Image 1 (cartoon, helix red, strand yellow):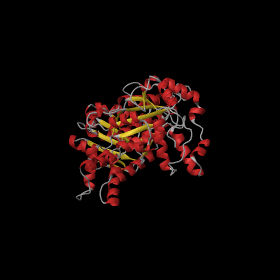
Image 2: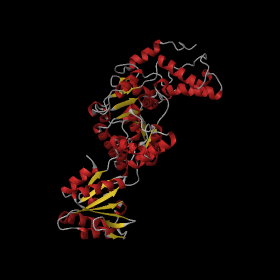
Image 3: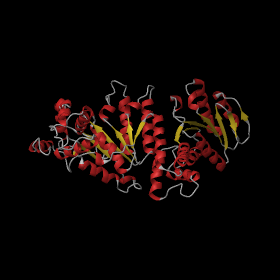
Length: 492
């Protein structure tokens, strides 16, 4: 349902206080004006620069006084008509007790004389006195059809707007931009490349996220060929994401939860997955959502999730989620973390957008049981230390990356993670020493945190899916398999 349709319903139902949340005031005003012309309603607008302007009577007031604008609304009422007064960026004045009181009186009086206060603002900032008097409407970002219309209006020459699958990729890249941002991105693409391309749109989208400070867009070049092991996890994620289920929300994949000791490739898997399936990876830093004002953290959380929904299809990554939502007891932050976590859980369970969520954790004891229940994730995987075959593949990848002689003898790596194999190769290249010498500078996390790794394995036993092979993770079987392989096998 469009903004025009929803606004028309509320006006006919005589909701005299309306708050429209929008970052595109000009487009919202065009939609409101169109509705008023269709219904033969009177429209007046106010902003701090131009004052109050009434389109029907051409009677303008140059006053920029917000209190005076509210008091003037009563004079715009007509005996048998309907009047909408749009107040732009009025959230700036909600700290004034006089303005709040004047709005209360006007909204109540508006039900009698059919004058409607419409506040147009990029954020919702309703004081407690007005919460029950206003209804909040959201001006949605343009959908794929609207973005295509914008593109066709800019790319007017033959060949400038691609066809078929390339057009779908282009529209995927444009989803999440405002109308103004999309017009700029399409125009810039024409100037740079002579046709519309997805690369420029992704650049603009990264700029948008950078300005908001809520999310980070990752677009790396590594796919699964640069990630050793995790065969079962890779197969599961690819099969889920490459199914043609865009048109049926019930069939869309929800995501995976990854548990493991540090350095086993959880984060690298998520970043490589985006490249493998052709989706952008959005990284949510929960710490960036925290605000200093009451309610600001919760609002920033909702804003970040709305942005994620708007950018679908995409992958959302939350790294070390148990640390991100630390303080769920509410004793240290007045319950802010618990409320943010509740908002995220509700979205995780109810969202219908094509967003694949990947959460990683190192310490499962800090996560509440409801977080990983069915229908919030498609699967909970345990990523153990790599086995012999996985390690050989990882060694090969990083020896090639750091240009190390493949004939070199490998060090003892029984407890090495993928990150420690990379560190060994990097140090060997940095210090110009052999891999065996470089390994002397690497202390495995399975040694420094042996107790916590053991506890995590025991918790995952029988409860999680194995990332390296199909089926449920069995800790004892994995350890026995490693003991049967000689330490020096396949290293010459």
